[in-house]
Length: 156
Image (tube, rainbow, N blue to C red; front, side, top):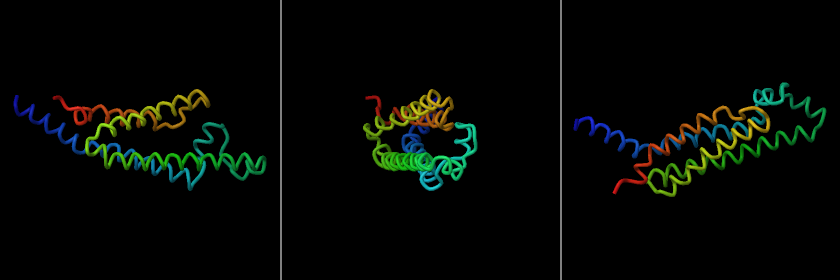
C-alpha cells in the first residue's frame, strides 16, 4: 500500500515539476497558427466551409477589391493578435507557471475562456465551429490547470 501511495506522490511531483510544458506546447501551437495567418493569409478550406465557395482572392478582388483586401487584412490582424497571445503564453509558462506562482495559474484561466467564446461566436454567428481545435485546446488547458492545482495551492 505504501509503494502505491509513493508512486502516486511521484507522479504528482513530476507533474508539478513539468506541468508547465503543457502550456508551453499550447503557446507553440498558437505561434504556428499565428504565423500561418500572418504570412499565408486566408485558410482556403475554412473559407469554403464558411462561405460555401472556394477562396479565390483574385476572383473576389475582381468583384470587390476592398472586400478582398479587408478579408486578408483581418486574417493578418487575427494572426498578429494570436502571436501576441502565444508570446504571453510561452513567457508565463516558462517563468511564473514553472515556478508555481499563483498569478500564473489564475492568468491561464483566460485560455479556456477565450477558446469557449471563440467556439460560441463561431457557432452562433456563422453556424460553424470556427476553430475545430478549440474544444481540444479547452480540454488540454483545463487538464493542465486542474491537475496542477496541488502545486499552486498545497495543503497546509
